Image (cartoon, rainbow, N blue to C red; front, side, top):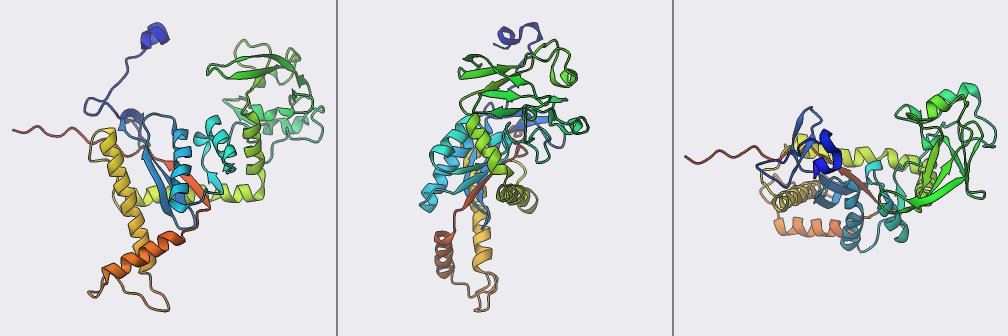
Length: 336
């Protein structure tokens, strides 16, 4: 199959011998190894994990909508918003959250930098020459956020003030009907070397039916409230993974097979939640509290208090995160 797709340049697919269900992925420490990708959703006010799973593929966004459904089933109400990084902001996720009236705080391809000089009062006027160096770029070329869309006229404006009118409509590689906008003023444009790739003569932008959802998320992210929420995403979710790895020493799975790894990950997240709950319940208060190290601990009373706290957790925002650093175990030694 690889040769049919890539021809002579095709490389053999590497499949882990000890566990065919995991994937060979890069490690943060360098190199490659058989890895699984566990994900978790965290309620930020309490730090409780409200959803956990292990992905079957590389599409991290597949975890978002199941996490929302699980959180709603747990709390009896949907979350008000979901905060996640750009890997989770697929078109299907944005559409699903919009249908559920849940605000998505996720960077998308339409998210513009706060100091983007392309966002000017009159897009027909070229961006001032001293400001052109600050235009957003991707892979050393002008990003699509350097272009301004005018919904009333259904055109894009480039940084030089030229229009990109509708050129054609057609299906993309995923079979989605898209509109293609093309600029006819690229030859001789001073920004052409920074805008065009390869032998391309005209800059083209694609707009699919999900672009309004990305633009709505971008406007949400541009607000002060959106920036404050997203700024708290990394501390909320990355702290969980840091405690699991460094505090509890969970750096690799001990089992093989997706079903077993999922079970192990669920147990890990359950242990994390119980640890947080016990810490919250048994924390010293002005009214006094039975410390777990004291011999007179009333286990039934502690559990009752835990469940009372479970029902009092406010579900406001879900923050999603993942890690690839939980590796499949090394091959087991053979019996003599």
